[in-house]
Length: 227
Image (cartoon, rainbow, N blue to C red; front, side):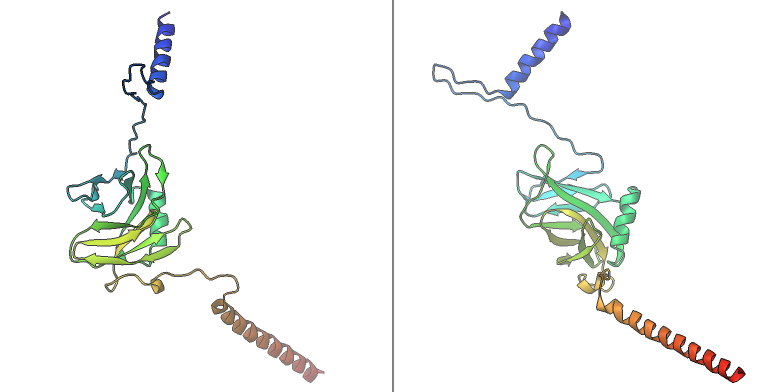
């Protein structure tokens, strides 16, 4: 009986939470009561909170501060540092960004709604990452296929700023020779039929053919002399 009573009480409470109270006949205003899930970020993920300057900032465990200067107030910016503790992910992203520079830092940055669903912002958002002063920095986005895309960035003393569109994987590095990363820093995989790769093979084929022809002629001449 006790279990049945508890079950009935839970069912009644559930109906009360999800269905708004109807208007009363005496003109009293309606009162809507809704149940709402509480979303907690997983370990290793850090949500940006609105600070006194009206910006959204997150302080990471290593002392790095990530700030978004423009963001949809209904969404939460989430920053996930990718470190050596994340062995597989770190190896993959390190390989993708090997040409970017030194002192590499990697982040996944994305946005969620109030229920924790990942969403696209569909608007440019400037992200600033505060680092140790005195080092020129550059940034790049990393696609899920491993391709590296240089980002226009501003490196000012102790921070670097760049603009993201939807979120994803990002790498920040100390510039090899100062300034921002250029497209020439990103190696491109040779495509099928790439002319740059075709000519060395044509030359090799020509040399190999000439060698075979010469060997054949020499053998024929030697045989003729012996006869």
